[in-house]
Amino acid sequence: MTQTNTISSKLLLSIFATGIMAFSGIVSETAMNVTFPTLMKEFDVGTSTVQWLTTGYLLMLALVVPLSSFLKKRFSAKGLFLFAIALFIGATIYAGLSTQFAYLLIARLIQGGATGIALPLMFNIIITQAPKQKIGMLMGIATLIVAMAPAVGPVLGGVVIDFYGWRMVFFLLLPLLFLALAAGIFAISPTNSPEKVRFDFIGYFLLAVSFASFIFATEKTAHYGWFDPLVLGLLVLSLVALSGFVLKAKQGKNPLIHLAVFQYKPFVLSLLFILSIQFNVLALGYLIPNYAQIATHSSAFIAGFLLLPGCLVGAFIAPFSGKLLDRMGAKKPILQGAVLIVLSLTLFSVFGQQLSTILIMLFYLIYAIGQGFSVGNMMTNGLRQLPVELSADGNAVINTLQQLAGATGTSVVASIVANQQQKIDLTQGTMLGSQQGFILLMLLSVFGLFCAVKTFQIQKK
Image (tube, rainbow, N blue to C red):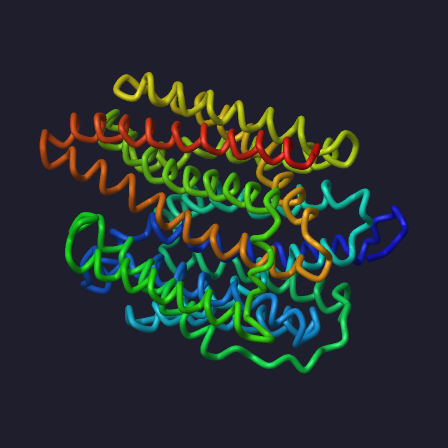
């Protein structure tokens, strides 16, 4: 790691280049959710089929991110970036020109794989190249780039579909991607000499089976519930495969991910905090637009805009909160953010059946501010608890489990709402189910706050 306190323009451009690719992947994911009704009509497919545009993307992301530690050792940062962005640009063009659903799905899977390379690469570049005193701010900038995407996606999808059609969602990303390509070619340096590291094929197979089974299970819960034999069977298969991966990793000389990261309690507690936030973020991303359209009878356009103010404010707070970490340490901004998150979800829970458009935007704004102060800083703080040689493994663990936590959050609250909708009428069931979902998220946020407090108690010793 460089010893100077100056941030070079090349480092900023490197973060921009990798961040834009990660941003484009998330934007296309969230924008696609708005296009589902249109795609179902155009390609004559059902809801369960069209959802694979998102489920398949998340699956590829979850399968590729665990490879990041191996890829970092085996290939140069520049080589990884060029490979990933070439895949992403090609897949984006292919998606925009697709004339059959199968072609569009293949393109989305490729985009998911490319994003799976870009997302951890961005954080690895910061960890290995940034001055120690500036890591917090740069992690905040990286978080800003990624955090803005969920806000932009639904709005982009809604506006573009109304005026230009769903294909333009992909074509509008191309200028950004070519700009990122030019910046990456100029700025990203190899940073390391590739090592001849053996690939753990058996370990990866077990991990892939575990993650794929888990995502398939969560995808089925909205239709069959959590206690359906198929869902339970997939969850058991996921657990068995994961247990096999752990045993293989402990015995092998070159494991895919060094599980030694879990020996560091502050890192584990930081990880649990981050996962609780990711669970809540995607759960709210489902609950709020769903509540707005069914319970308050807002249009899809308005429902898409409800999250935008909070996401934008929270995203722009992230670099500022990173500066606070660099100046005064991690404790204050993280704990303040965690308290705001608990407050927001408590308000959602209390007013769960009387939410108006204004209240939803206000409560989510509080949540997003708390998220902006805490998530990027907790990731920085957690990775700092690891030895340098384990930082890439810690990064891979965080980014991988975040995808699984997000997928679980959406599935859990969707099943809660669906259960109440079946018991009562659609409107009242949505309101009651959403309130129950908010209460669950509030309890999880309290657990996250506990993990944050415990983290700093251990670090103080």
